[in-house]
Length: 202
Image 1 (cartoon, helix red, strand yellow):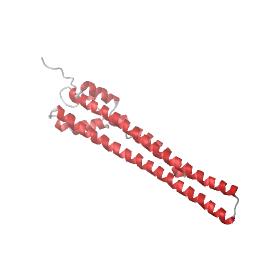
Image 2: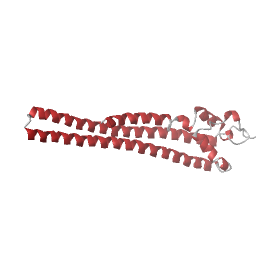
Image 3: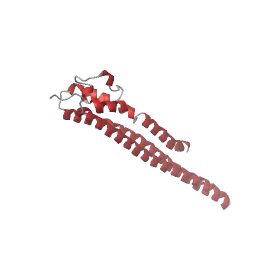
């Protein structure tokens, strides 16, 4: 029962870790990166207007994404946007699938332990009833002992369902955060390939 009680708390701790690591905004890009991309555009990394003072943060998914298609810079911009978009979807699909599987397994484990506690509690309750009939124990004492084990069965059931419900909530919350980061990253890629600081010629 201690493991069963610990599972919901572990889910919450794990969700906090996910928010600060797997789905941390700075993992994908910094606010400084976002401002640079929106103002400098494609001229930031390639072209005559490159400025080292405006370089993107290197340890981000945005930087890795842009440099991964750097050799294709001569391609049509629509093609580059499409290539980056595909990579972004693959990245976030992998993150969402992994986290959904992790929280889903924790939820199923909590539910399974809860149902196991239900079965164990009910077995013990009927065992008490059987023993009391053999020894001729009074009904008040028998009911008291049975109530203890039935209470155990119901409590473990409730905690198990609570763990499963919590896991579903956390899966939903991680997907929502993932979609937010995905949308912002897609928006930045669109800005990057359509924004240019180079003045047009007369």
